Image (tube, rainbow, N blue to C red; front, side):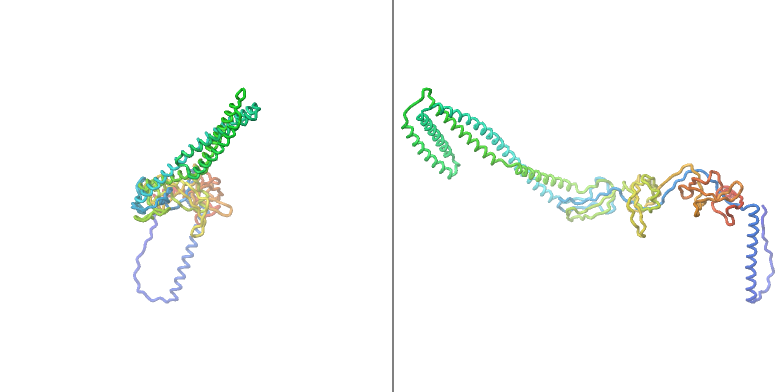
Length: 514
């Protein structure tokens, strides 16, 4: 290659003279006109050369490869597991010590807060005693009820038995009476029966009077009854003494007297059994009352068990359920643990995510399960899209945005909650497809197209159907074949139908280096 050398000749210095302003202006105009004429001349010459031999253009060969599209954005690091600790509704005590502050990293099982348990111990002892007393009271009532229930069952059986036997005995007495035709004998039998019954009743009344705890009113009643019965007994005795001493051949009158006496005994036994039945029925608590006592006992037992649980938990204080970072502290040492008060918040720094917002355009390519590369404070992590919200909310500019969560799969102690994280989500992938540089794909009102150089060296506008795109390349589904020469950027003066000479970008780079 020949070198073009421009030599500068020396000139002698001439004395400077002042130039007329009008003359100076004319000179500048002439220079500008001359430059324009020269430029036009060069353009005309280059155009002529281009028409005859073709302009040299850089091209890139269409090749097959793999393309992966992605979304690059940023979001905030947040925990996926959060636990807020509240004071127990039954823990009426004070906070003794708070062992952590906001930002502290804690381990699972670490004690975060302690309570003053003195008042809880006294309360627990009191409710436990109340629960035990209630339980014993219910057991006593249940046992007493069971005793009266057994008495009632026996009394009912006795009443039924005595009633059945008395009915049979009454029939037997009637048969004896029918067998005795002599009214005198019947009268004697009746009088003897009355005498026996009166004596039996007087004996029973005397038995009752022998009881020390008998009420005064009942005692007077029994004495009056004994007096009346004795008077009646005298009357019966007088009537008996007036009857003639007569007995039937088969001594039926004696059998009748015995039968009536037996019947009288059965009636008395029947009445006594009924009295026992009524007493047992009155003493037995109904099912509702007994159930109420049982539920009251169980409720007191539950309160006692809960008090014991509260005391046991209070002795432990608040313990971290998992390893993480303290993000909120509302408790104060010495302050009251008011029912339901929020004390501490613990967030996991192992189970973490990046929460970010995307527009509707990015949402079209996102799906749960897509892989992601995450950078937090210079540290690299891997992630996966774990959740895409189904409600769009406007941002500060009023643009609807959708919240997306990316789970960090390999989180460690270096992760800082609340810090910004850079995220690259790999949305789609196409393997072994024809690719074109992204800058070489153009669009007009008819669709996408590329400029290519055909086999005759002519620039051709080729309509294409595109697929996914990366930062550098676009997938060409239709319109280009492997090996086609693509013009990334159409040079000035070159258009569709121009004759050009091609220089592959790889070759151009090599020659430039040489």
